[in-house]
Image 1 (cartoon, rainbow, N blue to C red):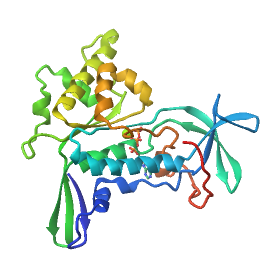
Image 2 (image 1 turned 120 degrees about the horizontal axis):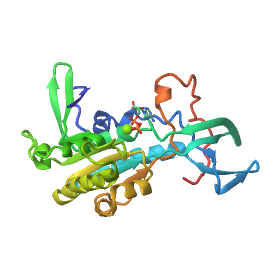
Image 3 (image 1 turned 120 degrees about the vertical axis):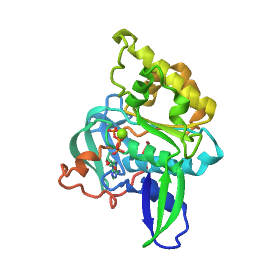
Image 4 (image 1 turned 45 degrees about the vertical axis):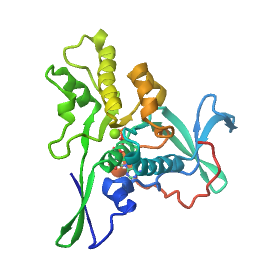
Length: 288
Ligand SMILES: Nc1ncnc2c1ncn2[C@@H]1O[C@H](COP(=O)(O)OP(=O)(O)OP(=O)(O)O)[C@@H](O)[C@H]1O
Ligand SMILES: [Mg+2]
């Protein structure tokens, strides 16, 4: 259950829903509007090296916008699903634009972690919930009752090890009946499945994902997933039959890869002493 207090007599607007589901916590000020990463075979040549160039702010902003679009359309499209990923691209020499100059900011390790995937995915999951406005002493409060289950990929996989496990009864809710959405967080971090030989692990994981996704496909249940795989790696990991279903379940545009957006956790933990806001920097037209 998620709660948000609001003033008295405030109508439940889209903006309030974004606030309640946590979509407004994501900031862009630590991200640059124009970034260059030194990359072999990069399309841009400068300083005798090759680079890829992209708009880091736009990459995250676009995902937030897509999440909002998804929330406005999912009710009309039962089973509409969503995938957000970012992979590791290792340590890259970095430049950011300052005025019209490319300023070196040293090497940065792009882990693919901590850049907002779970935050965005959770916002969609809670956005599929039952949202009610209740009167409280100070005013009103928005409550969200999740209409489905949010579990890590590891939990979704290991729960299937129990021979008495039944997906339908697991997903059914006394209060709401049929679920509307499930969230699978961190695909690729299942760990080893118990009681399965190591040579059979990958195939067994694929079978379990097939069972889970095919059930959602047939029941028109939305699947919201995050992963640290790039999209093509995710397709291979899940297997052809599952990926084929996802290509139908996730409308074009809602499979998002935000690789290249930096990890926010060192900033949240105060490990990055001062991040100059990039907002005033001149925006270039760059290729994402
Ligand atoms: N752009 C941002 N602005 C503010 N806070 C952010 C931003 N991106 C991430 N955070 C915060 O950083 C933490 C990590 O974000 P989140 O859990 O969404 O990352 P993730 O991409 O799922 O990471 P992982 O790949 O490790 O699972 C959270 O507390 C989140 O609120
Ligand atoms: Mg996460």
